[in-house]
Image 1 (cartoon, one colour):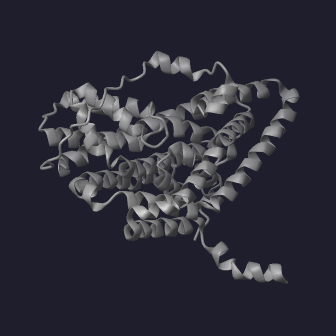
Image 2 (tube, one colour; image 1 turned 120 degrees about the vertical axis):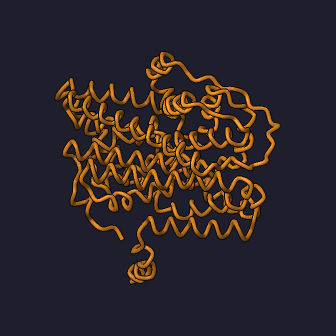
Image 3 (cartoon, helix red, strand yellow; image 1 turned 45 degrees about the vertical axis):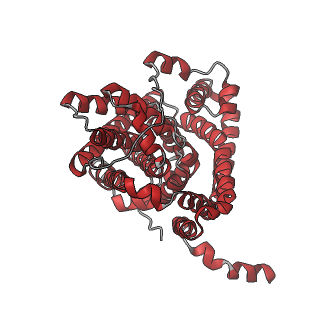
Length: 417
């Protein structure tokens, strides 16, 4: 009787959709930060616990889901086809993203009239060569790669192990079953961690909004506005357009089914950290199979950085306008090319986009010291670009799932209130 009474008492909380709880936590966090200022950092431990729990999931979840995804395909040709489609879609949307950033910055000119100094020294960063990237894909020690959370090396090792388990036939079945059970356990653990998400998001946002006052935001408000406007347009026009035109699917369902992951990405500013939530959204909300989502999403969290590319386009033009630097058409082409390649090499962790920005600026001769102007608000910009990254991962996963006949449209079209 007492258990029944408790269930009835908290039944209203269970009936609220997770994304609504998370959005409520975000709104309350903003309010707490505005009212309490830097004192709101008292809530930061809630966010830290949530981020630690999410980070705890990443390596075992990525490894197990990739192995299960590869072994479930059985067909090497299918895996190659999915890989090719995934990479092509990621590159195309990244080029769109940086182009949108450049167009909006050209039209709205956020850097004109901004009188900010940049005395801080910022050193140039060299882009890693293609050969070094390829060499570093293969782990010397897979256990070390797992321990250090090197996602690309984990992906390569998991793909190799998955293919090997498939090739040895019946002898690989017992190990496949172990990984399948382990992956299911990780999905369940992800669900348990996500139940804490509203409180974690509240703690993160309260700290961030309390830390940044109007003093630092007002001079750069136009830059923040352009980055957020470009991010929203990219998700609503490009991603929704791809879902509608290429996938013949309802884009509203895609947006609604992705909300949990997008809000967590916004609050955590980490594509890699949001990966467990993205996998859960792809399977539970969008109806993508475990095989496709387990393969496409980890790859996307590593190489698909549309938001970072968009951010680089906006910020580079902002700095050019602020310093009075005229850019040629060759410079614009260099921004698109370098920004696309640099975004692929960007780690899916908070703040990495700022490091890669120096590579793009160095290519067109802008003063690297100017990065110091946007460094103070980078976290606020990072939240927007990470949300775009995650939304793009889920869009590509949905399209690949649909093209392979591995998208359950009944789940996709089910209303989530």
